[in-house]
Image 1 (cartoon, helix red, strand yellow):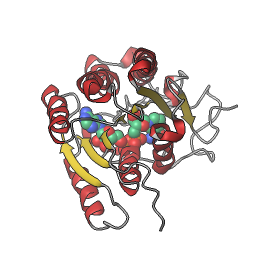
Image 2 (image 1 turned 30 degrees about the vertical axis):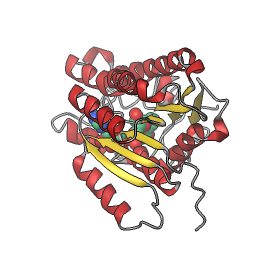
Image 3 (image 1 turned 45 degrees about the vertical axis):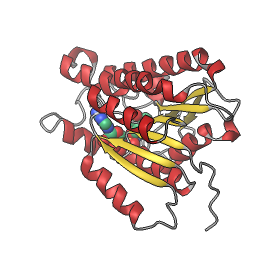
Image 4 (image 1 turned 120 degrees about the horizontal axis):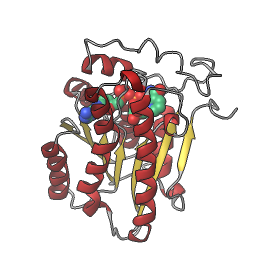
Length: 272
Ligand SMILES: NC(=O)c1ccc[n+]([C@@H]2O[C@H](COP(=O)([O-])OP(=O)(O)OC[C@H]3O[C@@H](n4cnc5c(N)ncnc54)[C@H](O)[C@@H]3O)[C@@H](O)[C@H]2O)c1
């Protein structure tokens, strides 16, 4: 296998990296020579990822450091930023991929606990992680640093999940655009990947978080279509690697003039 080493010596923090798209992104970055810090609340899955990487050093030629923690925990966010500052003195990319579902819950049935948790993981902690790492990301010499946020087609349409998830994904898009504009002259690019339907562990992770709740709200299941017209699974189900490729494109030099953009990666699901 010929490896491109596109990200050789880049320092990349991937938040939400143990399973799904984050896991695939970590592996892609390691194949291309990056120093990856993998932050996630699923310590068991992080350890499995580290084991997989250790077993195949020829393929995963970058370096991996795992950092278990809940992204809603201030000390953990601060801790990982301090660790990166101490060890590398800079951060080339923050990839904020962590996300959680609202079990398709419609507004009239959405309690504060679920609303707050979804908003915390999908938006509030994204902002706070950005704030923590901005001093490490701005004013780089040479190639720009990057922030990539994984949003959702639920950030541009209203019908793919419940009220909290849709609100959170619209909000994080606004955050990214504001950051792109504000820090454009400080050598930082900020972009968003909006996946469509992708086969990951997001339902399993939701079951771990909310073991006593129905996984899909009975009234929320029906709206899990775009504009109520196209159902899931009709040839538009992607793989985590499809999203990893999009993330890696946006942080690469090939995308050097792309800033403040949303890249929808959905196999054409929302193109009708
Ligand atoms: N799977 C889909 O169909 C789909 C579609 C559109 C958007 N998305 C978005 O893609 C992103 C990645 O999701 P995925 O589908 O790969 O799911 P996933 O559950 O496999 O991955 C999300 C990761 O975030 C981590 N995470 C969740 N809460 C956390 C917390 N509090 N602290 C630290 N880490 C936490 C999880 O442990 C997991 O490793 C999410 O933002 C999700 O909203 C997913």
